[in-house]
Image 1: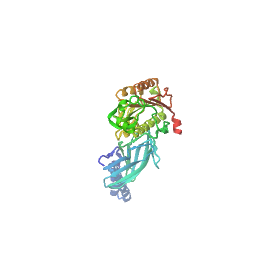
Image 2: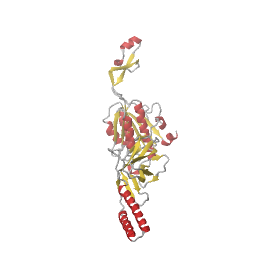
Image 3: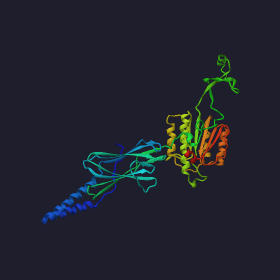
Image 4: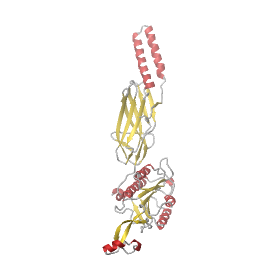
Length: 412
């Protein structure tokens, strides 16, 4: 409650004081002239004006308004609760308070027809409240976000006045409260990727190092196994050669690179359908990778809201790694002129071996093809996912290429 925004009046009407004085003077004159009816009417008008002045001056005194959103993180289509609260901590009741709350246009409120707003990507929720003396009232709404993004709530405009509607005090409460809507996460096969091995044969040509002191088990010897890995005791016991299985010294890593460019030139704009589909695919690959035990990282050639030029999350297996990735994808600003191949070349220099690089893009350029082939020759596992465009590359060992169509995957 202490951090609830305090409402500050924005408007004063100066007519009431002079009208009140005029009504009192007229009433006293009527008494002096022996006009009881005129005096009664004048004093009644004075009482009404005094009451209006009281509401104008003190209607929003010791009044607080705030909003809460629970939960503050959701997926598209999930239900969140929007609560509007108004507290009147004085003995003067408020017979009516009109609340006009600005909401994101991407939010649907159950059972309420939102009004249009002059601001882009905004709508208006209008509600009428009655607040008694020393009372707090709530209005709860069930809402549903329809697309990913980072959304702020407010400002809210409040209006109150006397029961006769002669005076109105208008107030504004600053924006407060945010909702982060993650991109949709689906099974990778729903995008057209193989269910069992969505990365195909894109295994790094230089696998992670193995620790000779940590034996995981044994298996029958196969041609090509190093003689150093033969487990002689197990071979003698079983009567045939056995090869030691060694634990790896590190966890396999998956580096997801998302390209937000959908046209050759950034001033041509973006294709929102393909881009949002690619964002959802990237989020789903991150969830799949973490579920499979990968260290997963994310790079995007676009900034976060209020953030750096690029999104850069190094591979990790922290319990909150998936949440960090989903938050970054929810809050990315899809406007950039930076090339994904430039980001690839700069970032992969600092990444270790045993890495699989996955590039999701709706724009495959010659420069990107050359960069991916260079990474493949350096021993990285490489996956190119071309969204509604030609890849111009062929799959081979260590390099997997997919050409996915948004319309076909959506229909499936």
